Length: 306
Figure 1 (cartoon, rainbow, N blue to C red):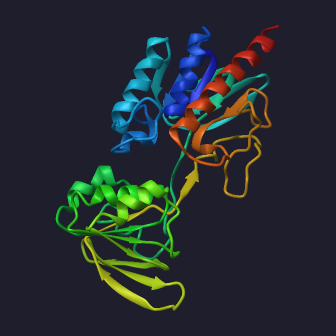
Figure 2: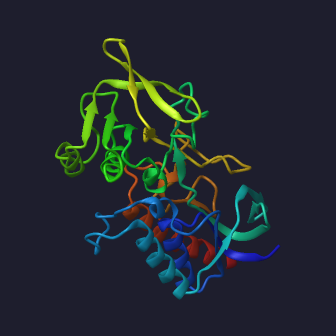
Figure 3: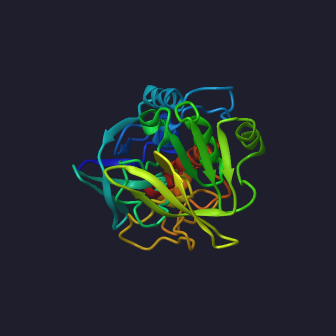
């Protein structure tokens, strides 16, 4: 088992930034990422709110951040982390391929889309139900597409899906969107988008693939059937925070609670980005969290070595 000063679990923008700052501080640091570096922004078509880039694809921005971190000496390995444990003053990270030992761990594991939890959703996952528009949108060219949700992700992905679909319905349980106003305006101005207000998806129907959904109006209780070729739910986020073999403080939704230094209630264990309880989930938040955690971990290790 190789020993490091800092282990970073998760190679999203926050994890890569933490790695860059740790490497610049001449710490022995390793970033463990289960897929490809960049996290969820790799699946984002366009990023328009990252300072310095008026418009850049998510994959391109991810690659730039990754290359910048590697330039300063960050090492990245591919592995899926199952558990983080305590071993005296050390922290042990157990993966599918190997186990790793460090004085400090920075957790940037992000999360995954929240499921609708309705009949037919799991059965038609990959058969018309998808949680990634940029991954699967092109499969539904000239078909009617439905999006469930009313936040930034739902509306942005709905706009993106108009590139492929003949029509895009955005189904929202309220009568107004939660998305940023600038994103709302683009959706309202798009002739391919139609909104279904005060409604939720009740059931997913089909044979070999999805062919319709049942929609319930939450005010009247009326259920209607909508013929579609694809459904993209974007109704929230579930943090990947169940990887600790010890207690860390979380809120009722499972988000890790930290102090201003990104430290959990356990010394030498930090949480950053979307897995951490905070006001909003933005790339800029993750990058700032990663910076703070790396600097805090460096100071912790200095004291640890004294």
